[in-house]
Length: 256
Image 1 (tube, rainbow, N blue to C red):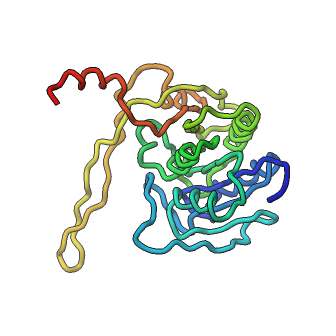
Image 2 (image 1 turned 120 degrees about the vertical axis):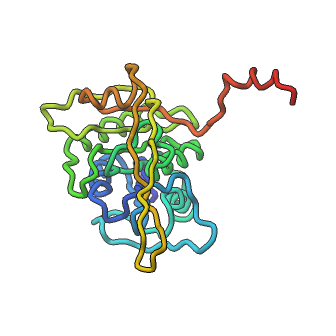
Image 3 (image 1 turned 180 degrees about the horizontal axis):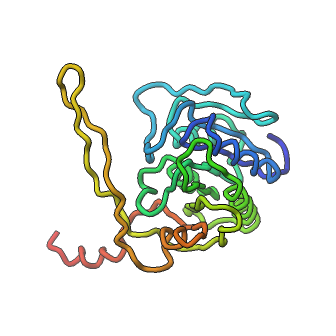
Protein backbone atom coordinates (compact mmCIF):
# COMPACT_ATOMS: atom_id res chain seq x y z
CA UNK A 1 0.00 0.00 0.00
CA UNK A 2 2.80 2.40 -0.87
CA UNK A 3 1.42 3.41 -4.26
CA UNK A 4 0.89 7.06 -5.15
CA UNK A 5 -2.50 6.12 -6.53
CA UNK A 6 -5.59 6.96 -4.44
CA UNK A 7 -6.23 4.39 -1.71
CA UNK A 8 -9.84 3.20 -1.84
CA UNK A 9 -11.55 1.22 0.93
CA UNK A 10 -14.48 -0.85 -0.37
CA UNK A 11 -17.21 -2.45 1.72
CA UNK A 12 -20.92 -3.35 1.61
CA UNK A 13 -23.75 -4.84 3.67
CA UNK A 14 -24.81 -7.71 1.39
CA UNK A 15 -21.71 -9.72 2.21
CA UNK A 16 -18.35 -10.29 0.58
CA UNK A 17 -19.70 -12.65 -2.09
CA UNK A 18 -22.45 -10.29 -3.35
CA UNK A 19 -22.52 -9.45 -7.05
CA UNK A 20 -22.90 -5.74 -6.24
CA UNK A 21 -19.59 -5.74 -4.35
CA UNK A 22 -17.80 -7.41 -7.27
CA UNK A 23 -19.25 -4.74 -9.57
CA UNK A 24 -18.05 -1.97 -7.26
CA UNK A 25 -14.55 -3.42 -7.05
CA UNK A 26 -14.44 -3.72 -10.86
CA UNK A 27 -15.21 0.00 -11.21
CA UNK A 28 -12.75 1.10 -8.49
CA UNK A 29 -9.74 -0.83 -9.80
CA UNK A 30 -8.83 1.69 -12.55
CA UNK A 31 -9.26 4.60 -10.12
CA UNK A 32 -6.82 3.60 -7.39
CA UNK A 33 -5.39 0.97 -5.08
CA UNK A 34 -8.36 -1.02 -3.81
CA UNK A 35 -8.67 -2.79 -0.46
CA UNK A 36 -11.85 -4.69 0.42
CA UNK A 37 -13.11 -5.25 3.97
CA UNK A 38 -16.64 -6.65 3.80
CA UNK A 39 -18.96 -8.67 6.06
CA UNK A 40 -18.66 -12.45 5.87
CA UNK A 41 -22.47 -12.71 5.77
CA UNK A 42 -25.38 -10.41 4.82
CA UNK A 43 -25.81 -7.43 7.17
CA UNK A 44 -28.73 -5.57 5.59
CA UNK A 45 -30.74 -3.35 7.93
CA UNK A 46 -27.98 -3.20 10.54
CA UNK A 47 -27.86 0.60 10.43
CA UNK A 48 -24.92 2.01 12.38
CA UNK A 49 -24.55 -1.02 14.63
CA UNK A 50 -21.12 -1.95 15.97
CA UNK A 51 -19.95 -5.17 17.62
CA UNK A 52 -19.12 -4.83 21.33
CA UNK A 53 -20.31 -8.08 22.95
CA UNK A 54 -18.06 -10.57 21.20
CA UNK A 55 -14.75 -10.56 19.32
CA UNK A 56 -14.40 -9.41 15.72
CA UNK A 57 -12.54 -11.61 13.26
CA UNK A 58 -10.84 -10.78 9.98
CA UNK A 59 -10.03 -13.47 7.44
CA UNK A 60 -7.97 -12.96 4.29
CA UNK A 61 -10.09 -13.51 1.18
CA UNK A 62 -9.01 -14.64 -2.28
CA UNK A 63 -12.30 -13.81 -3.99
CA UNK A 64 -10.89 -10.77 -5.79
CA UNK A 65 -7.94 -11.50 -8.06
CA UNK A 66 -5.08 -9.08 -7.48
CA UNK A 67 -6.97 -7.24 -4.71
CA UNK A 68 -6.21 -7.24 -1.00
CA UNK A 69 -9.45 -8.36 0.63
CA UNK A 70 -10.73 -9.45 4.04
CA UNK A 71 -14.01 -10.86 5.27
CA UNK A 72 -15.16 -9.53 8.62
CA UNK A 73 -17.42 -11.20 11.17
CA UNK A 74 -19.01 -7.86 12.08
CA UNK A 75 -21.23 -5.14 10.66
CA UNK A 76 -20.51 -2.74 7.78
CA UNK A 77 -19.45 -0.07 10.29
CA UNK A 78 -17.11 -2.59 11.93
CA UNK A 79 -15.62 -3.20 8.48
CA UNK A 80 -14.85 0.48 7.98
CA UNK A 81 -13.36 0.86 11.45
CA UNK A 82 -11.17 -2.23 11.08
CA UNK A 83 -10.27 -1.27 7.53
CA UNK A 84 -9.01 2.14 8.58
CA UNK A 85 -7.28 1.24 11.83
CA UNK A 86 -6.07 -2.34 11.37
CA UNK A 87 -5.77 -3.16 7.66
CA UNK A 88 -4.53 0.05 6.01
CA UNK A 89 -1.36 1.87 6.95
CA UNK A 90 -3.00 5.26 6.43
CA UNK A 91 -6.45 6.72 6.06
CA UNK A 92 -7.93 5.99 2.61
CA UNK A 93 -8.59 8.72 0.06
CA UNK A 94 -12.08 7.35 -0.56
CA UNK A 95 -14.54 5.01 1.16
CA UNK A 96 -17.18 3.38 -1.04
CA UNK A 97 -19.98 1.07 0.04
CA UNK A 98 -22.25 -1.12 -2.13
CA UNK A 99 -23.38 -1.59 -4.73
CA UNK A 100 -26.39 -2.46 -2.60
CA UNK A 101 -29.03 -4.87 -3.86
CA UNK A 102 -32.07 -2.66 -3.25
CA UNK A 103 -32.80 1.06 -2.84
CA UNK A 104 -31.71 3.17 0.13
CA UNK A 105 -33.85 6.21 -0.58
CA UNK A 106 -35.53 8.63 1.85
CA UNK A 107 -35.63 7.47 5.50
CA UNK A 108 -34.28 4.04 4.54
CA UNK A 109 -30.89 5.69 4.97
CA UNK A 110 -31.38 5.37 8.74
CA UNK A 111 -31.66 1.57 8.58
CA UNK A 112 -29.15 0.92 5.82
CA UNK A 113 -25.90 -0.87 6.54
CA UNK A 114 -24.64 0.31 3.16
CA UNK A 115 -25.14 3.95 4.05
CA UNK A 116 -23.97 3.57 7.63
CA UNK A 117 -20.61 2.40 6.29
CA UNK A 118 -20.41 5.57 4.18
CA UNK A 119 -21.51 7.72 7.12
CA UNK A 120 -18.79 6.14 9.25
CA UNK A 121 -16.29 7.23 6.62
CA UNK A 122 -17.70 10.77 6.78
CA UNK A 123 -17.31 10.69 10.58
CA UNK A 124 -13.61 10.09 9.93
CA UNK A 125 -13.61 13.20 7.64
CA UNK A 126 -13.12 10.97 4.59
CA UNK A 127 -14.82 11.36 1.20
CA UNK A 128 -17.38 8.55 1.29
CA UNK A 129 -20.17 7.27 -0.95
CA UNK A 130 -22.91 4.67 -0.61
CA UNK A 131 -24.22 3.20 -3.87
CA UNK A 132 -27.53 1.32 -4.25
CA UNK A 133 -29.33 -0.23 -7.21
CA UNK A 134 -33.14 -0.29 -7.05
CA UNK A 135 -33.26 -4.05 -7.58
CA UNK A 136 -33.16 -6.70 -4.83
CA UNK A 137 -32.30 -9.57 -7.20
CA UNK A 138 -28.98 -11.19 -6.34
CA UNK A 139 -28.28 -11.50 -10.09
CA UNK A 140 -29.35 -7.96 -11.01
CA UNK A 141 -27.81 -6.21 -14.01
CA UNK A 142 -25.33 -3.60 -12.73
CA UNK A 143 -24.36 -2.20 -16.15
CA UNK A 144 -25.95 1.22 -15.69
CA UNK A 145 -24.98 1.31 -12.02
CA UNK A 146 -21.31 0.80 -12.83
CA UNK A 147 -21.31 3.79 -15.18
CA UNK A 148 -22.91 5.99 -12.54
CA UNK A 149 -20.49 4.74 -9.88
CA UNK A 150 -17.49 5.44 -12.10
CA UNK A 151 -18.56 9.01 -12.87
CA UNK A 152 -19.37 9.94 -9.28
CA UNK A 153 -16.27 8.28 -7.80
CA UNK A 154 -14.02 10.01 -10.36
CA UNK A 155 -15.58 13.39 -9.59
CA UNK A 156 -15.24 12.82 -5.85
CA UNK A 157 -11.56 11.98 -6.15
CA UNK A 158 -11.06 15.04 -8.36
CA UNK A 159 -13.09 17.58 -6.37
CA UNK A 160 -13.07 16.20 -2.84
CA UNK A 161 -15.99 16.33 -0.41
CA UNK A 162 -16.93 18.76 2.38
CA UNK A 163 -15.86 17.28 5.71
CA UNK A 164 -18.57 15.35 7.51
CA UNK A 165 -20.57 14.78 4.32
CA UNK A 166 -21.08 11.59 2.33
CA UNK A 167 -23.17 10.86 -0.76
CA UNK A 168 -26.21 8.60 -0.91
CA UNK A 169 -26.50 7.44 -4.53
CA UNK A 170 -29.50 5.45 -5.72
CA UNK A 171 -29.66 4.12 -9.28
CA UNK A 172 -32.89 3.07 -11.00
CA UNK A 173 -33.13 -0.43 -12.46
CA UNK A 174 -33.49 0.49 -16.14
CA UNK A 175 -32.20 -0.42 -19.56
CA UNK A 176 -29.54 1.89 -20.97
CA UNK A 177 -31.94 3.56 -23.40
CA UNK A 178 -34.34 4.35 -20.54
CA UNK A 179 -31.77 5.90 -18.21
CA UNK A 180 -31.92 9.72 -18.17
CA UNK A 181 -28.91 10.80 -16.12
CA UNK A 182 -28.01 11.97 -12.61
CA UNK A 183 -29.74 14.50 -10.33
CA UNK A 184 -28.43 16.03 -7.10
CA UNK A 185 -31.41 16.38 -4.74
CA UNK A 186 -32.71 15.92 -1.20
CA UNK A 187 -34.08 12.81 0.48
CA UNK A 188 -37.85 12.40 0.37
CA UNK A 189 -39.96 12.62 3.52
CA UNK A 190 -41.24 9.05 3.22
CA UNK A 191 -41.43 6.24 5.74
CA UNK A 192 -42.53 2.66 6.39
CA UNK A 193 -46.02 2.03 7.77
CA UNK A 194 -44.97 -0.95 9.86
CA UNK A 195 -46.96 -4.05 10.59
CA UNK A 196 -46.07 -7.53 11.84
CA UNK A 197 -46.94 -10.94 10.48
CA UNK A 198 -47.66 -12.96 13.61
CA UNK A 199 -47.21 -16.74 13.39
CA UNK A 200 -46.98 -19.72 15.72
CA UNK A 201 -44.08 -22.14 15.91
CA UNK A 202 -44.39 -25.92 16.48
CA UNK A 203 -44.69 -25.33 20.23
CA UNK A 204 -47.57 -22.90 19.71
CA UNK A 205 -45.42 -19.92 20.71
CA UNK A 206 -45.87 -16.69 18.76
CA UNK A 207 -43.17 -15.14 16.62
CA UNK A 208 -43.19 -12.15 14.29
CA UNK A 209 -41.95 -11.08 10.86
CA UNK A 210 -41.63 -7.33 10.32
CA UNK A 211 -43.51 -6.22 7.21
CA UNK A 212 -45.44 -3.13 6.08
CA UNK A 213 -45.90 -0.71 3.20
CA UNK A 214 -43.67 2.13 2.10
CA UNK A 215 -45.58 5.42 2.24
CA UNK A 216 -44.39 8.37 0.16
CA UNK A 217 -46.36 11.39 1.37
CA UNK A 218 -43.80 13.80 -0.08
CA UNK A 219 -45.15 14.83 -3.48
CA UNK A 220 -42.73 17.72 -3.99
CA UNK A 221 -40.15 17.78 -6.74
CA UNK A 222 -36.39 17.43 -6.38
CA UNK A 223 -36.42 14.42 -4.04
CA UNK A 224 -34.63 11.12 -4.54
CA UNK A 225 -37.91 9.26 -5.05
CA UNK A 226 -39.15 11.89 -7.52
CA UNK A 227 -36.12 11.62 -9.79
CA UNK A 228 -35.74 7.85 -9.58
CA UNK A 229 -39.35 7.44 -10.72
CA UNK A 230 -38.44 9.60 -13.73
CA UNK A 231 -35.42 7.57 -14.78
CA UNK A 232 -32.59 9.42 -13.04
CA UNK A 233 -30.03 8.35 -10.48
CA UNK A 234 -30.32 10.42 -7.30
CA UNK A 235 -27.39 11.88 -5.37
CA UNK A 236 -28.23 13.11 -1.86
CA UNK A 237 -25.51 14.81 0.21
CA UNK A 238 -25.92 13.22 3.65
CA UNK A 239 -24.57 14.16 7.08
CA UNK A 240 -24.36 12.52 10.48
CA UNK A 241 -25.24 15.71 12.37
CA UNK A 242 -28.90 15.08 13.29
CA UNK A 243 -29.37 18.38 15.14
CA UNK A 244 -32.68 20.08 14.32
CA UNK A 245 -31.21 23.58 14.25
CA UNK A 246 -34.54 25.27 13.47
CA UNK A 247 -35.96 23.94 16.76
CA UNK A 248 -33.22 25.34 19.01
CA UNK A 249 -34.75 28.81 19.41
CA UNK A 250 -38.17 27.34 20.12
CA UNK A 251 -36.79 25.10 22.87
CA UNK A 252 -34.81 28.02 24.33
CA UNK A 253 -38.19 29.62 25.11
CA UNK A 254 -39.21 26.65 27.24
CA UNK A 255 -38.93 26.86 31.02
CA UNK A 256 -36.05 24.43 31.29
